[in-house]
Image (cartoon, rainbow, N blue to C red; front, top):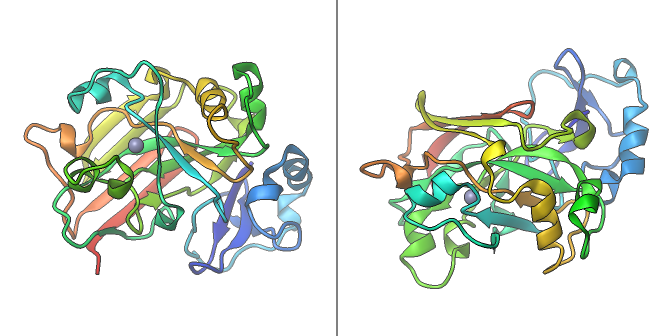
Length: 281
Ligand code: ZN
Protein backbone atom coordinates (compact mmCIF):
# COMPACT_ATOMS: atom_id res chain seq x y z
CA UNK A 1 0.00 0.00 0.00
CA UNK A 2 1.25 3.46 -0.97
CA UNK A 3 0.05 6.16 1.41
CA UNK A 4 0.54 9.86 0.88
CA UNK A 5 -0.49 13.32 1.98
CA UNK A 6 -1.61 15.89 -0.56
CA UNK A 7 -2.76 19.48 -0.67
CA UNK A 8 -1.41 22.83 0.42
CA UNK A 9 1.45 22.96 2.97
CA UNK A 10 0.08 22.59 6.48
CA UNK A 11 -3.34 21.47 5.20
CA UNK A 12 -2.48 18.11 3.63
CA UNK A 13 -5.12 15.40 3.40
CA UNK A 14 -4.46 11.69 3.77
CA UNK A 15 -4.60 9.65 0.59
CA UNK A 16 -3.53 6.46 -1.06
CA UNK A 17 -2.21 5.76 -4.52
CA UNK A 18 -4.39 3.26 -6.37
CA UNK A 19 -3.14 0.63 -8.83
CA UNK A 20 -3.67 3.06 -11.74
CA UNK A 21 -1.57 5.76 -10.07
CA UNK A 22 -4.52 7.93 -9.03
CA UNK A 23 -4.71 9.61 -5.64
CA UNK A 24 -7.69 8.44 -3.56
CA UNK A 25 -8.96 10.48 -0.65
CA UNK A 26 -8.77 8.78 2.77
CA UNK A 27 -10.29 11.63 4.80
CA UNK A 28 -13.37 9.65 5.73
CA UNK A 29 -11.22 6.83 7.10
CA UNK A 30 -8.18 8.33 8.84
CA UNK A 31 -7.35 11.89 10.02
CA UNK A 32 -3.76 11.87 8.79
CA UNK A 33 -0.87 9.63 7.74
CA UNK A 34 0.88 10.10 11.07
CA UNK A 35 1.68 8.72 14.52
CA UNK A 36 -1.13 6.56 15.89
CA UNK A 37 -2.54 5.86 12.42
CA UNK A 38 0.60 3.95 11.41
CA UNK A 39 -0.06 0.91 13.63
CA UNK A 40 -0.49 -2.52 12.03
CA UNK A 41 -4.17 -2.41 13.02
CA UNK A 42 -4.79 1.00 11.48
CA UNK A 43 -2.91 0.06 8.29
CA UNK A 44 -4.88 -3.20 8.05
CA UNK A 45 -8.13 -1.21 8.16
CA UNK A 46 -6.95 0.98 5.28
CA UNK A 47 -5.75 -2.05 3.33
CA UNK A 48 -9.24 -3.55 3.57
CA UNK A 49 -10.79 -0.58 1.75
CA UNK A 50 -11.65 -0.85 -1.94
CA UNK A 51 -9.70 2.02 -3.58
CA UNK A 52 -12.22 2.18 -6.43
CA UNK A 53 -14.88 3.26 -3.92
CA UNK A 54 -12.80 6.11 -2.50
CA UNK A 55 -13.16 9.61 -4.00
CA UNK A 56 -10.39 10.48 -6.46
CA UNK A 57 -8.41 13.68 -5.94
CA UNK A 58 -9.04 16.45 -8.46
CA UNK A 59 -6.29 17.44 -10.88
CA UNK A 60 -2.65 17.05 -9.90
CA UNK A 61 -2.36 18.34 -6.34
CA UNK A 62 0.88 19.11 -4.56
CA UNK A 63 2.24 16.11 -2.68
CA UNK A 64 3.27 16.79 0.92
CA UNK A 65 5.71 14.91 3.13
CA UNK A 66 4.37 11.35 3.34
CA UNK A 67 4.28 11.45 7.16
CA UNK A 68 2.71 14.22 9.23
CA UNK A 69 3.51 15.43 12.75
CA UNK A 70 6.92 13.80 12.82
CA UNK A 71 8.24 13.61 16.37
CA UNK A 72 11.88 12.79 15.66
CA UNK A 73 13.95 12.79 12.47
CA UNK A 74 16.94 10.60 13.29
CA UNK A 75 19.72 10.38 10.72
CA UNK A 76 22.53 7.87 10.33
CA UNK A 77 25.90 9.17 9.10
CA UNK A 78 28.53 7.34 7.07
CA UNK A 79 26.49 4.16 6.71
CA UNK A 80 27.97 3.18 3.33
CA UNK A 81 31.70 2.41 3.39
CA UNK A 82 32.29 3.96 -0.05
CA UNK A 83 30.54 7.19 1.02
CA UNK A 84 32.60 7.32 4.23
CA UNK A 85 35.73 6.96 2.06
CA UNK A 86 34.74 9.82 -0.29
CA UNK A 87 34.37 12.13 2.71
CA UNK A 88 37.77 11.05 4.03
CA UNK A 89 36.39 9.13 7.01
CA UNK A 90 36.95 5.55 8.18
CA UNK A 91 33.84 3.34 8.26
CA UNK A 92 32.32 3.72 11.74
CA UNK A 93 32.45 0.88 14.24
CA UNK A 94 29.01 1.83 15.60
CA UNK A 95 26.26 3.78 13.82
CA UNK A 96 26.84 7.55 13.75
CA UNK A 97 23.59 9.28 14.77
CA UNK A 98 22.45 12.86 14.51
CA UNK A 99 19.10 14.67 14.49
CA UNK A 100 17.60 16.81 11.74
CA UNK A 101 15.15 19.51 12.89
CA UNK A 102 11.61 18.47 11.93
CA UNK A 103 11.01 22.04 10.65
CA UNK A 104 13.21 21.00 7.69
CA UNK A 105 10.59 18.52 6.46
CA UNK A 106 8.88 19.35 3.16
CA UNK A 107 7.12 17.68 0.25
CA UNK A 108 9.06 15.52 -2.21
CA UNK A 109 8.69 18.01 -5.08
CA UNK A 110 8.80 21.28 -3.15
CA UNK A 111 11.61 23.68 -4.00
CA UNK A 112 14.79 23.25 -1.93
CA UNK A 113 16.16 26.53 -0.59
CA UNK A 114 19.85 27.35 -0.44
CA UNK A 115 20.12 28.95 3.01
CA UNK A 116 21.38 32.49 3.48
CA UNK A 117 25.18 32.51 3.44
CA UNK A 118 25.49 28.99 2.03
CA UNK A 119 28.05 28.04 -0.60
CA UNK A 120 28.10 24.28 0.05
CA UNK A 121 24.54 22.97 -0.14
CA UNK A 122 24.69 19.27 -1.08
CA UNK A 123 22.42 16.30 -1.80
CA UNK A 124 22.01 12.85 -0.18
CA UNK A 125 19.51 10.25 -1.43
CA UNK A 126 18.56 7.91 1.43
CA UNK A 127 16.18 5.15 2.38
CA UNK A 128 13.76 6.52 4.99
CA UNK A 129 12.26 4.23 7.63
CA UNK A 130 8.95 5.25 9.23
CA UNK A 131 8.23 3.86 12.68
CA UNK A 132 4.78 2.35 13.27
CA UNK A 133 5.10 0.92 16.78
CA UNK A 134 6.83 2.15 19.95
CA UNK A 135 10.36 0.75 20.07
CA UNK A 136 12.52 0.75 23.18
CA UNK A 137 15.37 -1.75 23.54
CA UNK A 138 14.01 -3.90 20.72
CA UNK A 139 16.11 -6.75 19.34
CA UNK A 140 17.11 -6.98 15.70
CA UNK A 141 14.59 -9.81 15.32
CA UNK A 142 11.78 -7.57 16.61
CA UNK A 143 12.89 -4.42 14.79
CA UNK A 144 11.03 -4.72 11.49
CA UNK A 145 7.75 -5.31 13.36
CA UNK A 146 8.16 -1.71 14.59
CA UNK A 147 8.44 -0.34 11.03
CA UNK A 148 5.31 0.97 9.29
CA UNK A 149 7.05 1.41 5.96
CA UNK A 150 9.65 3.15 3.84
CA UNK A 151 10.08 6.29 1.78
CA UNK A 152 12.59 8.32 -0.20
CA UNK A 153 14.49 10.99 1.77
CA UNK A 154 16.79 13.70 0.43
CA UNK A 155 19.02 14.48 3.43
CA UNK A 156 19.96 17.92 2.07
CA UNK A 157 23.11 19.15 3.81
CA UNK A 158 25.20 22.31 4.06
CA UNK A 159 28.79 21.13 4.34
CA UNK A 160 30.31 24.32 5.76
CA UNK A 161 27.55 24.62 8.36
CA UNK A 162 28.00 20.89 9.07
CA UNK A 163 31.77 20.70 9.44
CA UNK A 164 33.39 24.15 9.46
CA UNK A 165 31.29 26.01 12.03
CA UNK A 166 32.13 24.06 15.21
CA UNK A 167 29.99 21.63 17.19
CA UNK A 168 28.42 18.63 15.50
CA UNK A 169 26.27 18.15 12.41
CA UNK A 170 22.83 19.52 13.31
CA UNK A 171 23.53 23.03 11.94
CA UNK A 172 24.28 21.66 8.49
CA UNK A 173 21.23 19.39 8.31
CA UNK A 174 18.32 21.44 9.61
CA UNK A 175 17.62 24.41 7.31
CA UNK A 176 14.09 24.83 5.98
CA UNK A 177 13.39 22.43 3.07
CA UNK A 178 16.37 20.20 3.94
CA UNK A 179 14.05 17.22 4.48
CA UNK A 180 12.00 16.28 1.39
CA UNK A 181 10.06 13.12 2.30
CA UNK A 182 8.03 10.91 -0.03
CA UNK A 183 6.20 10.81 -2.41
CA UNK A 184 4.74 7.68 -0.84
CA UNK A 185 4.99 5.86 2.44
CA UNK A 186 5.21 2.30 1.11
CA UNK A 187 4.04 -0.11 3.80
CA UNK A 188 6.54 -2.77 4.81
CA UNK A 189 4.47 -5.68 3.44
CA UNK A 190 5.34 -4.35 -0.06
CA UNK A 191 9.08 -4.29 0.69
CA UNK A 192 9.98 -7.46 2.57
CA UNK A 193 13.72 -6.90 2.00
CA UNK A 194 14.83 -3.29 2.62
CA UNK A 195 18.43 -4.32 1.88
CA UNK A 196 17.92 -4.93 -1.85
CA UNK A 197 16.91 -1.49 -3.17
CA UNK A 198 18.71 0.58 -5.79
CA UNK A 199 19.05 4.33 -5.05
CA UNK A 200 19.99 7.13 -7.44
CA UNK A 201 20.18 10.91 -7.67
CA UNK A 202 20.64 13.24 -10.65
CA UNK A 203 21.49 16.94 -10.71
CA UNK A 204 20.41 18.64 -13.96
CA UNK A 205 20.24 15.24 -15.63
CA UNK A 206 23.75 14.14 -14.60
CA UNK A 207 23.77 10.99 -12.51
CA UNK A 208 25.64 11.78 -9.28
CA UNK A 209 24.67 8.99 -6.90
CA UNK A 210 24.13 5.32 -7.66
CA UNK A 211 23.90 2.79 -4.86
CA UNK A 212 22.13 -0.14 -3.34
CA UNK A 213 20.92 -0.58 0.21
CA UNK A 214 22.68 -3.96 0.10
CA UNK A 215 25.88 -1.99 0.79
CA UNK A 216 24.77 -0.41 4.06
CA UNK A 217 27.22 -1.07 6.87
CA UNK A 218 24.37 -1.33 9.39
CA UNK A 219 21.09 -2.63 7.97
CA UNK A 220 17.59 -1.48 8.90
CA UNK A 221 16.95 -4.06 11.69
CA UNK A 222 20.29 -3.26 13.30
CA UNK A 223 19.68 0.50 13.07
CA UNK A 224 16.19 0.36 14.61
CA UNK A 225 17.46 -1.90 17.39
CA UNK A 226 20.55 0.25 17.99
CA UNK A 227 18.71 3.59 18.03
CA UNK A 228 16.02 2.16 20.34
CA UNK A 229 18.70 1.56 22.97
CA UNK A 230 19.41 5.32 23.15
CA UNK A 231 15.94 6.85 22.68
CA UNK A 232 12.42 5.48 22.48
CA UNK A 233 11.18 5.50 18.91
CA UNK A 234 7.52 6.47 18.55
CA UNK A 235 5.04 5.94 15.73
CA UNK A 236 5.66 8.59 13.09
CA UNK A 237 9.35 9.01 13.86
CA UNK A 238 11.55 8.85 10.76
CA UNK A 239 15.05 7.39 10.36
CA UNK A 240 17.22 8.39 7.38
CA UNK A 241 19.59 5.47 6.96
CA UNK A 242 22.61 7.09 5.32
CA UNK A 243 23.64 7.92 1.78
CA UNK A 244 25.61 6.01 -0.89
CA UNK A 245 28.61 7.64 -2.61
CA UNK A 246 28.38 10.48 -5.08
CA UNK A 247 27.55 13.50 -2.93
CA UNK A 248 28.83 16.89 -4.09
CA UNK A 249 31.47 16.95 -1.36
CA UNK A 250 32.89 13.71 -2.78
CA UNK A 251 33.32 14.97 -6.37
CA UNK A 252 36.81 15.91 -7.54
CA UNK A 253 36.76 18.87 -7.25
CA UNK A 254 33.67 19.18 -4.99
CA UNK A 255 30.51 20.61 -6.58
CA UNK A 256 27.58 22.12 -4.74
CA UNK A 257 24.05 23.16 -5.61
CA UNK A 258 23.21 26.49 -7.23
CA UNK A 259 19.87 28.23 -7.58
CA UNK A 260 18.26 27.21 -10.86
CA UNK A 261 19.38 23.58 -10.72
CA UNK A 262 17.07 20.58 -10.42
CA UNK A 263 17.54 17.42 -8.35
CA UNK A 264 15.80 14.15 -9.21
CA UNK A 265 16.16 11.12 -6.97
CA UNK A 266 14.51 7.80 -6.39
CA UNK A 267 14.60 4.37 -4.82
CA UNK A 268 13.31 1.10 -6.30
CA UNK A 269 9.64 0.67 -5.39
CA UNK A 270 9.44 3.94 -3.44
CA UNK A 271 8.95 6.45 -6.25
CA UNK A 272 10.80 9.60 -7.22
CA UNK A 273 11.34 13.14 -5.98
CA UNK A 274 12.09 16.24 -8.05
CA UNK A 275 13.22 19.51 -6.50
CA UNK A 276 13.98 22.89 -8.03
CA UNK A 277 16.82 24.60 -6.17
CA UNK A 278 16.12 28.21 -5.23
CA UNK A 279 17.84 30.88 -3.16
CA UNK A 280 16.32 31.08 0.32
CA UNK A 281 15.52 34.34 2.06
ZN1 ZN B 1 22.58 11.66 5.30
